[in-house]
Length: 261
Image 1 (cartoon, rainbow, N blue to C red):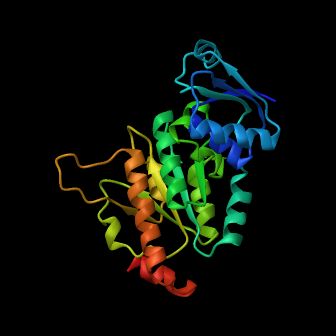
Image 2: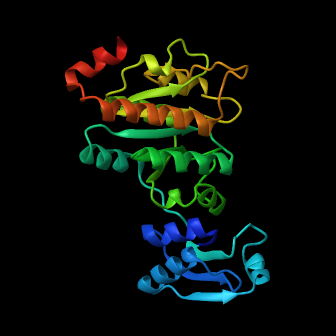
């Protein structure tokens, strides 16, 4: 097992709840004792994971200087799903899949915030580029407040080709683009949907932009005409969920007409 050090009470507790990683040992600061620590110890005991109390200085050494808030765990690396199998499983589980696809998000803090938002919005899966993009690291897990332990994540070798494949699977792809003609709020989103968010500095790459079925912007009223990747993902995901939960789903043969109208 390739080991990682997971830091922070939220990340460690959610790893225990999710039961997706192997957890070898949990280290707790002797000086910290609260309700969250009680729950961590309880769940660790149920799973047979040993807990050790140490001085904060020792936790600082183990975490190599990362902010640990008195809790860290030795865990296995996060597993990635096969993207095609994940889509098949999602389609079998829900008539209105909501996917999130990231085109080159590189900052771990941004990725963590996006994962936290996606999990809260009920996204069914996250798809990230295999190259030149951030992966699920301990820093990302901490920034996501443990949400990365619950959201299914797959890595995609070629995002443009994957977007074309999604279209064949009946899943529309909607790219976030500040220069798009249509506002997000002008589009009927009651259909299987994949939201595509670009990287921090360049946005959507040209080929990914071309492969998206739809492009939409978030209308702004201030002097700053765009949002960061995490904020844009939040607006898109929650607007889609608002439409999907507040209205009846369109018949399959009417979805294309409604979306393109």
